[in-house]
Length: 241
Image (cartoon, rainbow, N blue to C red):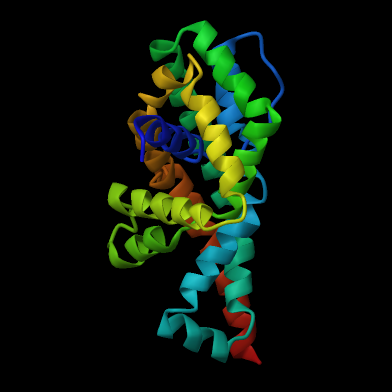
């Protein structure tokens, strides 16, 4: 593999390291880049149902929860409905913190010209293509293993990087590899990409912090109250029958 080809591969790897985005161009190029990489609407899109689905899938792995559901059908659905508002509220706060941290990073490390060029790429047809196929091939296998294994349900950087590697391997085997390589070669020859690529470790650190964000004390109290109220009413009715 030539140096140029390796750099092209790195270019694509950095582009694949962040979630897909929805955007509207901003006069501030750094803020525009944040919106191109991590638009609030996209990060929150369908979050509530997805988070509840994951939570209930994990609950179904717990023998005690399975037994409770068997005795009182609908228990898990009641839990999901009760949990969703607080889950969404917490994620909104975490996403806002993440986007602010990204903005601080870009503003501190990238010139306005480089930020504008990066944002323009992510709005282009090639940028949208890279973002879309990355989203379609995302892997969370190693992250879920960490959540299940760790008492605090945290995700390690190693697990996150392993999932990103699995995604890139899936893309290498895809029918789109020729176009991916062409885009990578274009990025390797651009002036903005090398400075942007140096921020990859910092962006991954912020992404990991978002993934590991936990409830605040107020959110945890709200979550507990909602579950206790919903489950008490459901179980009282169930066992009274």
